[in-house]
Amino acid sequence: MSRLTFNRFADSLILVVAILAVWVGLHAYAGDSAISAPATTFAFAGRLLVQPSFWTHVAATMEAFALAFAISAAGGVALGLVLGVRRFAGDVAEPILGSLYTIPKVTLYPLMLLVFGLGMSAKVAFGVIHGVIPIMLFTIAAVRNIPPVLLRTARALRLAPVKTATSVLVPAAMPEVVTGLRVGFALTLLGVLIGEMFASQRGLGFLIINGINNHDVRMTTAVTLLVVIFAVAANSLLLAFDRRVHHG
Image (cartoon, rainbow, N blue to C red; front, side, top):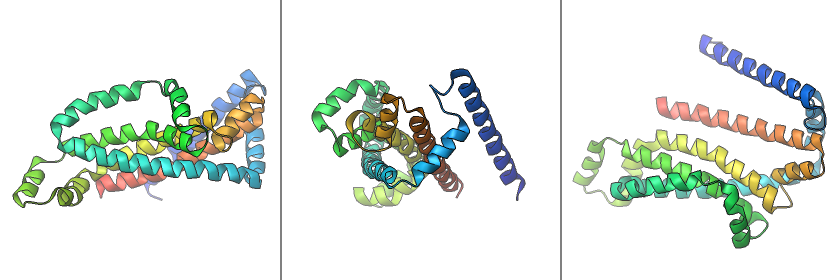
């Protein structure tokens, strides 16, 4: 094991121990009525993982998340490339997008429910509104950081817009775009989970809010733990890919 790998492992271990210590402290302070103990939570999560009904909820969340992230990634990157190339349009759009993203999403939920109703479409919409704007902003910044000589060369070679985008813009902007996709991944997942709390009868978000409503602390804590584990694992893989793209 290299020294760098050992240091990363040690840092991760310290972080896990610190989180568990805080968790134990919160349980000791608030009691079982607010948060279940780590041992109880892991045991309950293990029981959930062998229940077919639980995997039905996992499948519902993953289906909505996959569709929402696909829309966010494709739309965010495409619009970001266009606004990045058209500098004036990008200068106008960037502060507007930033302002829109600062609006608390909870204020949009009644409108989203009226437009999309309950079910899959609403969950996907909630995910997209959380993930697409950050991806757009990262892509705009990535295009602006492309060396101007590359774009001048593309114009000198009289490349078509599509050819310029695929052979010049995307490869040059890829490291920052991947970073934007990593951020958008986490935010889209968050949006889908929140959407399931408000607009669904299935999914992990529904299990969390149903546990809160029924005061089932073990259910709420265990599902939250499983979501966090999935998010951390996925983000770690994306971060490793991000580092490889930046240094590859």
